[in-house]
Length: 278
Image (cartoon, rainbow, N blue to C red; front, side, top):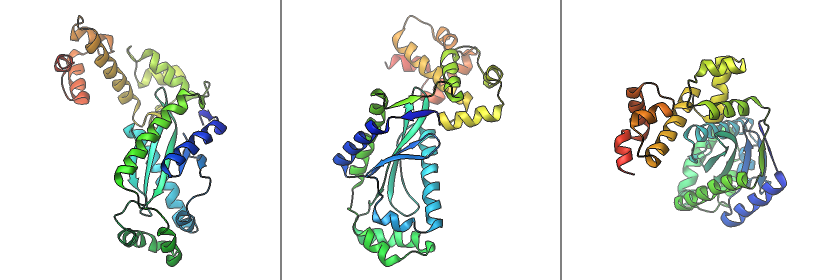
């Protein structure tokens, strides 16, 4: 774990989210372990689901996979869980590092309980559960619209930013992922590569790749390219006096044509057009 959360302050914030949305919210750390939630107890429907060891394992895998997907896309990820309910994950960032996840879930988002039960029953039959009890618990779930879920995900994204701004979480500066991120942030416009980073920290490529996937959701080389392109976008917008070739070099691209190719692929238009549209 590369971060520490102030759980007292965090619980107050989670309570505020629940008061506004009436949706249970959970915090996971960077290793996908649940730290705290509000309300503390899960809904009766999910309690029944988790009486099956196979279903419980599916719940844990579903949470982990969703965290990884949200990390890869650097944005909220809304999905249907293995049992048929709607859930949403938002990554929590400090700088460029994912240090945790906010999660809301167990939301019933079908037109009617009858329609939802048809799908959920089929998904849950293999777990050997008490289907009558499960159906009764399901009918206690309020029907929540897609628009409401979308709005709740936007609020949760704001909560993720706010908890960092209010210092409800701190990084362990001695941890290797934090050191690597600091090093990349200081040197990404230079001649930096996977090899130079591995040599600097005396680690193997496999470990570096694992750290990059866990903290950035992408490979280390792709992360460096993204940082360079983001810097190029700023220079193009704020410094019209600079030639595009000068910006390429300032952002760490020795090959001008390669810079044009990468910029167009990631931004959707070449640098000159991007500058003209600003």
